[in-house]
Image (cartoon, rainbow, N blue to C red; front, side, top):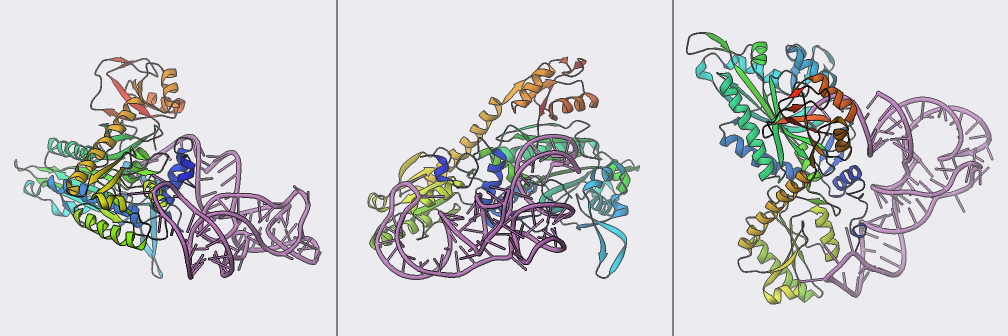
Length: 479
RNA sequence: CGGGGAAUGGCGCAGCCUGGCAGCGCGCCUGGUUUGGGACCAGGAGGUCGCGAGUUCGAAUCUCGCUUCCCCGACCA
């Protein structure tokens, strides 16, 4: 019973991870490429993941006091160019609109690569008094970055995301917001996507262009590479001074406001695929799975088909609280359907056949463990709810084990090199200088993913130069 | 942007070296038998061989140019 037999046309997860990733996305009908380079079509099954992600994240944003709004796609060049470091960071990947209808435009319009500029300019009109603060706004939208090398969900020319943009009276309040939202992301990614992350601060080299400080949560993919799952930026007063967001404070003084931004993208779908998938295809955590349960009926005669169909309908009605798909296709045998839905990552499969109907039970199979059990039809909703929660928890636990099994410490450059070559996350001391960070990158292809909040505070010596370090940081190769 | 590979029906590929009727498997359509881990029989549809030049009586095949995709590295959510 080899896996090649069941999952045709998909490269091996363990031997050809990159191809596996591309193959499984096509085969599971998550996405497709379009005629424009790097522009991805997200198919219904894939978009359903995004809708679930949106819904769960949005709930958290609202619960922390944010409102949604929408800002324009096009940004005048002069506006984008106002913040020097910011525009320099994005310049190579901005797409421009130069014509409208028959006429050349007087000023080029950038298709937003991110919205700090257009939103900052807008906020300057809204803020006069400390009483106008804070502003807590999020937008769900598309952005465009002209990428040379593209991969499904991980790096596409156009992608979907949310970007929160807030304005505060004090730096303390802004910093609280930045860390609060990083915490929101961590909670969401761990508890809904079942992906463990490491939260920390980005180095000067890796931070968002134009930010005072950038924070991230980093996840480990199935091949040991890191993926930044979300970021949160303390923009200081850079953008407020550039875009003139100022207010009269309680002490009658005019002051520049403190702004933040934070975002997560469709890249999270790439993480879902890579973290949980296995040799047989996708595995989705129940909380975001497009279908949480698929029902496969089994019959021989027309009589059995009628019986089984009626029972399946009953079961489906009972499971109204879940995302349930009934696969009544007559042109495929059950075995085909089993393999297909496993490949497409549905967490639980219910088989209903004549034997089940007779015993007033169903056969339930977990995607992650393939464990098969018979459950009574009575009270199935509650039982399945428990089982889905169990699967959700087990996926997170499994990913945590994988993360810790593939995380090591290195005390010298050769050790670091060896560990990175073995596709590990590596704790190593760093003196804090960009030149050493870049030297390590050159020698190992690894970057500092972040300086984790939770780390040894024990002093040591920099893995590159030997100078004193205040604690180890996290090195890894990354997507 | 470097280095390598590829482009032939929806998908996976053979054919190319040595120019001569465009093929195979899967999928798809029709009919029938099947259905508890990827069923089978019969019949059928579907192609500007990535694009553009050139060589030739004749090009999927040879030559030149271009484009796109995939993999591995440098830059990014």
